[in-house]
Length: 418
Image (tube, rainbow, N blue to C red; front, side, top):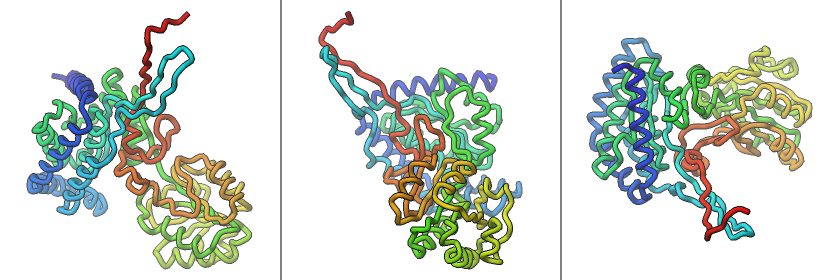
């Protein structure tokens, strides 16, 4: 069987599973999810053995220490996957919720109800725990899922998927509700993202290169998040102690993630006081600061920034620093150079807050808080499938609701249209 034929078979199996999943009750789904968690927990040694194969291959291939760390399944990380599934069991099932309902003058009752999307393809890199996270979130929302992980975690992903499938089947999970593409052939990704009629949505999770490649190849809708060029603007009305704390947290708490601050914007009226303080604090935390000409004159430790720095997603201990005239100038800068991910203002002025939150065109906008909170767990969603910087269907952290669509159910008593 050719790869193309095999992918069509997998797609057909997913469509059949999706129809069966749509009929499952929440209680039944939770029972299956609990069985998945139990099976995953029972196979800890199997998971570790499979993961060691991937780690050995990664070391031989010269993967960086950071990549090997992302790849490793420690006992704590396996326990975290198990806990994550049990947490999903406790989350409210959005499928079947009434979004709204109304009655027309002719007596027709119109209900707008949440329903599963259908078949979702998840393409991801490195971290094998995404196999469990993505599978259980899709299952909770009655979506069939086709998973395609990175070649560096092929054994780990297979061991996790086997545990989920076999554990779920013990409690009656429909066959092929969770399918993992086990081939490392890159053509499988192209086939997956072009299966119109069999796949309803693609969610890529990984670096900008992966996501752009998927979006360019796809014939089905793709939810995208290219990168996170996140900003914090310190207004003239800001509490500067609060501004310092937020800035340090946004940049330094975990610099290698998409919701970390990359550019700090400071109002010119408080720059003379605030810039030396924040630069000193950043340097103490190992951050290299690259600034515009004004910032360089305010602190000699600031290196001169280039135009590319304003677009940069460093994912590292590097910070771009720019002095702006006012909140409008900050908004203009963010809308020009940002990635529509997460941006913050630190300000006591309600007028400045309003101008910023209304003007910044990003998925998540903060007032007096760190951008590091852009996360499904931190938003109280319990878990997330990813973060979207698109504007249609889903935007920002994607939880269970974002894995559903809706349909109208219309109830009548024999009405006909005149």
